[in-house]
Each structure stands twice: as C-alpha cells, then as structure tokens.
Image 1: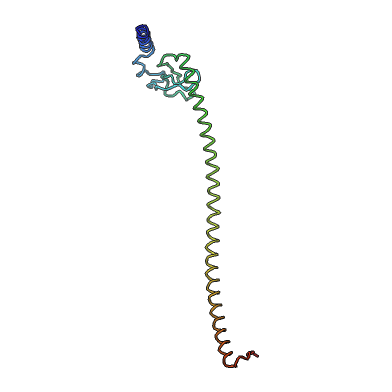
Image 2: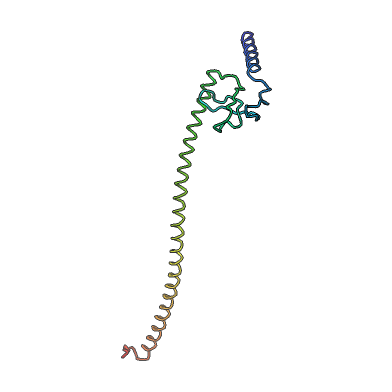
Amino acid sequence: MEAGQNSKSSHHSRSNNNRSNSYNSNWVDAYCGCGEKALLRTSNTYANPGRRFLGCINYEETNACKFFVWVDPATCPRGLDYGRHVQEKIKELEKKEDKLERLNEVLEKDLQKMMKKMDKLMRINNELKKKNEVMWKCNVLAMVVIGVLLVVWLGNWKHTNGKMLYLP
C-alpha cells in the first residue's frame, strides 16, 4: 500500500510540476503580433487532439501574424491514442449524421409527393361523394316514380277485373 501511495504522490507532484511549467497564467492575456488579444482554442488535429493553444484572432486570414503558443503540455502517447480514437468515432458519427440527413431529405421529398397525391385523392373522393349523393337522390326519385307507377297500374288492374291494360 505504501509503495502505491508513494508512486501516486510522486506522480501527482510530477503532473503538478509539468502543469506549472507548461501553463503560464500570463498567456491568457497574451497579445499576438497584430496587437489583438490572442484567443484560447482547442486543437482538433490528429497529432494534438484536445490540446489547448493561444492563437492569433485573425489566424484564418492569409496575412495573419501566425501567433501560436501551446497552453497545455504535450499529450502522453496513451492520451494521443485515446484522442485519436475519439476523433475517429466523431468522424464515424459525422458520416452517419450526413447519411441520415441525406435520407431525411429524400424522405421529406417523398412525403411532399405523397401529400400532393393525398390531396388529389381527397379531391377525387369529394367529387365521388357529390356524385354518390346525386345518384342516391336519382335512385330515390326512381323508386318513388316506380312506386307511383305500380300504384297506378295496380289501381287499373282492379278496375279492369284482372285483365291487362295495355296503353296505346
């Protein structure tokens, strides 16, 4: 147990020494060659994933002063491997996100097409409902006419003593 504690405390003091040697609190107020306050950024490169640095505010411009200072100490090999692993996972997820966005765009277009078809079918359905109402009214009218004719015919049947009455 004591050996583990000693190694932990010596490791802890080493990391504190590294941190104090590599990070200078005055760097946060550093100014670049442009006279602008340098920005604290985080590296996303393969060689230094997640490592912080101060850089020129105009670093993206072609005539920037290229001011650059690392704030964090160099990352240990295990940390680099982990950072690279995380970057690979991020790239995989970004690819999946891109695929899902493209699929979503296709589905949105398909949905719009389906909505147009559905609108057309709804209009056709409404027209058919109107025609069905007209047909229903015609059928009712035809049944009434047939009923009236049947009553007239049966009335004539009684008056002719069962003989068929033919119309001229």
